[in-house]
Length: 146
Image (tube, rainbow, N blue to C red; front, side, top):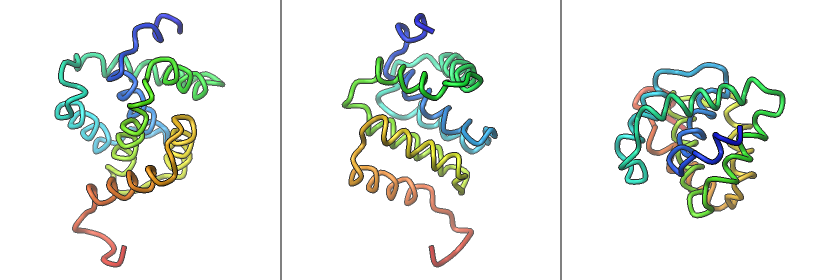
């Protein structure tokens, strides 16, 4: 585990958060994986990111989630390797992945709450991020009143 923490870059941490949200309901949906790929392909923070690292980060998250205290270990890695100025970014990317399939499972909601708490994202910032994610991923099909 120590070797992983020393080699995690900021983009690695961001990818790990996105993978964790996608895996939180034990069903990695295609829409979520496409969202992660799109984010990595387009955001400046990933400009020099080696796409092959996505698989490495996914394996790391899956390994952590198979352990009893895996979520705590993931948050420890984030605390050690993700500078505070990227905490809101991590939360925003997590929200984008969570809403990518058009619904939020209870496990995704709980993990988002944990991420918000662990990364110390303020309630106001979190509300703005959540509203923006919902606005970006709204569909033409569905409830007209929502």
